[in-house]
Image 1 (cartoon, rainbow, N blue to C red):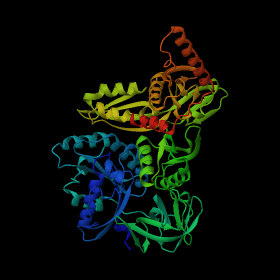
Image 2 (cartoon, helix red, strand yellow; image 1 turned 90 degrees about the horizontal axis):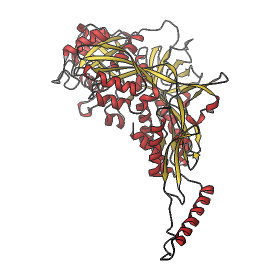
Image 3 (tube, rainbow, N blue to C red; image 1 turned 120 degrees about the vertical axis):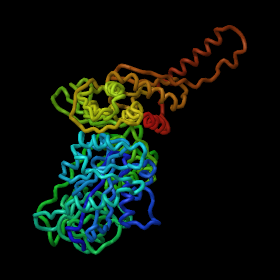
Image 4 (cartoon, helix red, strand yellow; image 1 turned 180 degrees about the vertical axis):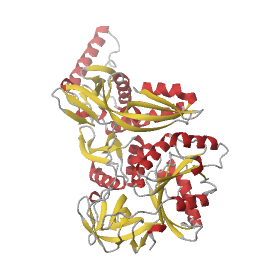
Amino acid sequence: MTERTLIRNFCIIAHIDHGKSTLADRLLEYTHTVAQRDLQEQLLDDMDLERERGITIKSHPVRMRYVAADGRTYELNLIDTPGHVDFTYEVSRSLGACEGALLLIDATQGVQAQTVANVSLAFRQNLRIIPVINKIDLPAANMALCYEQMEEILAIPREEALLVSGKTGDGVPELLEAVVQRFAPPEEPEQPGSCALIFDSNYDSYRGVVTYVRVRKGVFRRGSRVRLFSNRLESEVKEVGFFGPQMQAAAELTAGQVGYLIPNIKSPSDTRIGDTVTNVNDPCAEPLPGFQEVRPMVFSGIYPIDTADYDQLKASMGKLQLNDAAFFYQAETSAALGFGFRCGFLGLLHMEIIQERLRREYGMDIIATYPSVIYHVYLKSGEMVEVDNPVHLPDPAAIERIEEPIIRARIMTPTDYIGDVMNLVMNKRGYCTQTDSVDAHHVIITAEMPMHEILIDFHDKLKSITRGYGSMDYEPCGYRADKLVKLDILVNGDPVDAFSSIVHVDAAPVRGRQLAERLKEVIPPQMFQIAIQAAVGGKVVARETIRQLRKNVLAKCYGGDITRKRKLLEKQKEGKKRMKLIGQVNIPQEAFVAVLRAGENDK
């Protein structure tokens, strides 16, 4: 059992791709937590997806033993966190289980937009911060820039910064000493009773639900009965342990420690991240202050390509939600795609990751509809309804106005690209509210723009026009009314709900033309001519025509008067007209897949 005064709980926070996982590898190496033969790059990133993309998606806890300069052995509990803006909620959960944070700054890039956002998150949780300038071994490292930006943007004195190279290991011993000296040991709550905070969870097909906990007070042992505060569910603990970095069973978890509990719970829906666990024999009166309740920002429909896989998809989503609390889903039905789910995500990268995990980890063959956001629709009756699916938009005659969610974006860019970035913001129906000079070469542009406009390709275009040097962080800042309309796609006069979307009135013709052109390519020709139309209300804004399959009725006419040929063609024309009146166009499933996946490729 480790004394509480010898425990240090901390996490690593930074902008995406600033070297968090690489530094975590060096910490594991220097504390001999992992044998030399088992070391590999991005050791804590256990998903194939994380290794391929070079990003951290899930936070990963690990316990290290470190013998400090004072001769005492400390228990260091590290949580590696994601850096992308879509996973801010994941970062806030990790911060809730710590007393300190290592703030990583890339020596070649300096302070970035997400660095500023993560620092404000840490300050809100009253955490002690140690600034660490990483990648000092690179020739392009600019230490003067990093020091200046630290003091100007983050208000952190340059004397507090440590210089480290996660690749070579330079400065890592000094960093470990700083963790022991500067971070405080865990404090014990004043309220009586045992309690632990669930900051993450996972699903094991053999053992059921595995909860990642930070013990605030008391002791949790194997065989003891525990109770969850959210649903009052009682269960026996089958196993307790810690991450080293693999799961290792232990006799007990005591106050201040980070580890895992495996209660006898089989259903993923019974556990909630941010919940409090307490011992039945030594209960606490109130739950610990949990994490913020997360609200999805982006919505999309996910459907199984084979309808027989619906139940399996539902079970897979339940397990995935346990591992990712920011993911939300509910059942819905589409006339075109059958039974599926309406899913909520924190952002577009989050949506891509969830879809890829469903395909890889659970073997699901799925299709996703065009992403949308939550609109506030005010009716003339005075009522307000929330709409996240264009199909549910009320009749336009009954709508007084439609409000869309607005975000406040902080875009950090070199001064050379200010004009291009401002043009991009204006093209996305946004406007710049403030420009702050960071140093001689960088500015932070504060802009407000519709959430829907940044979903598709904003981030890619920002990186493109700033040659990769621009970065962005955003937060919601309310709703604003605008001229928004529902764009319907009609095939042979019948609307297809899977392709409906809510767009700005000025963008409707362009978006309608794109969809009509794609549908023309993938819908096979029929015996009669098919019109593909994009319509706003009753007005057609774009049209494409699929040619008809024709029989050569003139083949037997090898001569004679032209009126004979004309008579045969008129007869065929009348037949096609009758066929069109009673004919139905069956859009094949492959067409939906092709069009919606083409939409994904445009992002």
